[in-house]
Amino acid sequence: MNTSSPYVSSCPVGCSAALEDTALRVTEGALRRCTGCGQLLSSATEAQYLRSLGRFDTSAGTLPDARSQLRHDKNSARRLGKLLAVLGRPSSTVRLLDVGCSSGAFLQSALRLGFTAEGVEPSADAAQTARTAGLKVFTGYLEQAQFADASFDAITLIEIVEHLRDAHSLLQECARILKPGGVVLVTTPNAHSWTARAMGARWAGFSLNDMGGHISFFNPHSIGLLATRCGLQTHHIETRNVRFFERGQCNPAQHAVAKIAAELLNWPARLAGTGHDLHAYLQRPLQ
Ligand SMILES: [Zn+2]
Image (tube, rainbow, N blue to C red):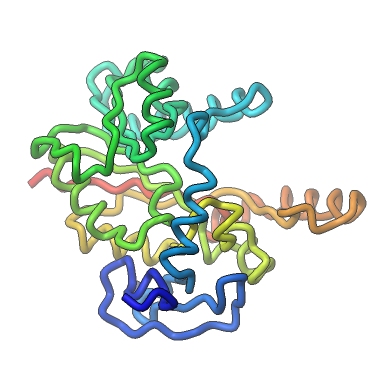
């Protein structure tokens, strides 16, 4: 590959459709759009991508600090509760895999709630931090772990797919190691959210460096298409939250107004599927 060509050269959702430039210009150049599914893609080179990932490759990983621990626990419990509702089973019967588990914060929540849980994490330092805390974590990528067919009841991909050039292969592997009826939860920023549309190229979700390697920007339609192509059914997709005050771009008065506007729009956004945080519950068919 030419070292100046974009790292993502085809649609990660698996479309063979052409990519077209958009008017959204970020540091690495114009974002491109898949003419098939609307997926937006970074123009970053492989070197730029790897540099941005490296900044987040630390032993602390994504462990919440004291201030964010409570919010993290609440969010994790809500997601795990919804997984159980889709599965229709108690946590004590569920074997869960967290892909890209970092230093294990989400695994800790799952274990506390009674799940049997383990993780996969390519960052050796973060994986070691998780193991030191007593968690079962494989160092490497999911495909390298070579789990047997139909090993898990639930798989979580929390803010992972937007970092990948080939989300299609990852979801296919998830479908293989899920039991029939098992569920994958995919969470990712929604590039069709009101927040993303209002912020344009300034949307924090598009920032390669601030976000540690964001290169592929999903919307509810492209996530659903990806699921279908990987042999998964969409149980449901939900979106949450509106934010108009990212990256400290406004003064305190503007911040207060933006916050009130965001609060007022939270429910309408959820109903319209245009919230900032996209959560897709995807299920392996029973047969
Ligand atoms: Zn596409």
